[in-house]
Length: 173
Image (tube, rainbow, N blue to C red; front, side, top):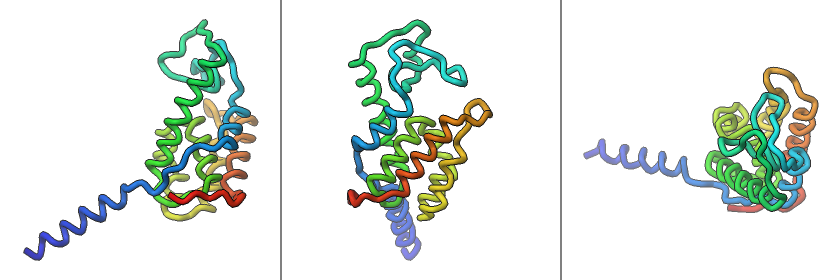
């Protein structure tokens, strides 16, 4: 029966490893960052790599050439997309975050997608507790279609600045 005890401990350790550490919500400061860099376009357009986009950077199979939306629809799509990005950060980050760190990561995920973040060195370093190393990763994500894009570099710098700031509004989960 000695073998059953380590198995039970291993199961508990595995379960605890995947417990949610953060349960934060995107702040108005974070939302302002996303809105600033995305801008709002009410008619569908192709982004720099040819992805059909509308509103505040909304993409997906529902976006078609010639599509138009209202301001209210753009806001609703933004809320839906931000909610998804925030859920991703809350679910995959296994270290305690400040509100600023969370907001920076949500904007990053909103722009690049959960898949890119989930397999990134940034996430690995962050989950290892290397916040400085994670912060340096922002600048490496400044390309679209293989080409460096000045606007993406400015966005990554704004995210890194927010990530490294602390205005005292740290939330504890």
